[in-house]
Length: 188
Image 1 (cartoon, one colour):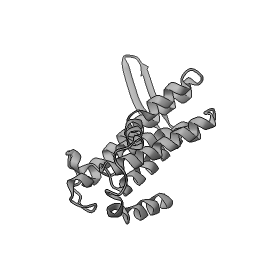
Image 2 (cartoon, one colour; image 1 turned 90 degrees about the vertical axis):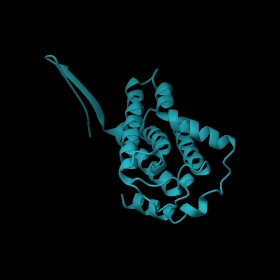
Image 3 (cartoon, helix red, strand yellow; image 1 turned 60 degrees about the horizontal axis):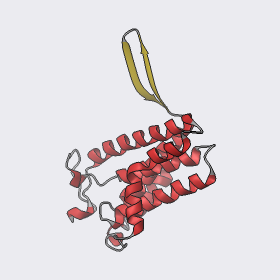
Image 4 (cartoon, one colour; image 1 turned 45 degrees about the vertical axis):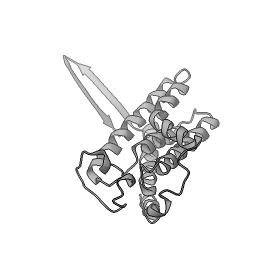
């Protein structure tokens, strides 16, 4: 946790310096933005024929990362760069997208897939490398397109990566039904 907090704080010192400095119209941003929407689904598809359990865990990681990032976004209420309000403007509890910068949801989603891939003992090395590379491309794309500050994507990488590793190793969605009643939840 300390290393994550330190890297997010360090990235925050560069939030203004990185805005508008990275090329925003290139293949990397297109790939990164798209990957941030499909990462766990794509990796689940690759692993499904061979290992259904691993495939399900990629989907679990993506779902947990999406929910976690969404909850934190609303709670923090950080202004997006395109608002031109600066990186230190907050409106906690706002439901408007303009105040949902921290953490990056696209990056969290892609990093959840990358974390799960790194923890997936049966995943081939090329899949692990591709997942990590594409998560980093997603982080780059979100800053380059001025949708997030550098610290937003850094937090997204940590949040999603931790969820992905934990989900692949330990966490379980569970659904139990019996006697006309169903219960659902997540256990860690």
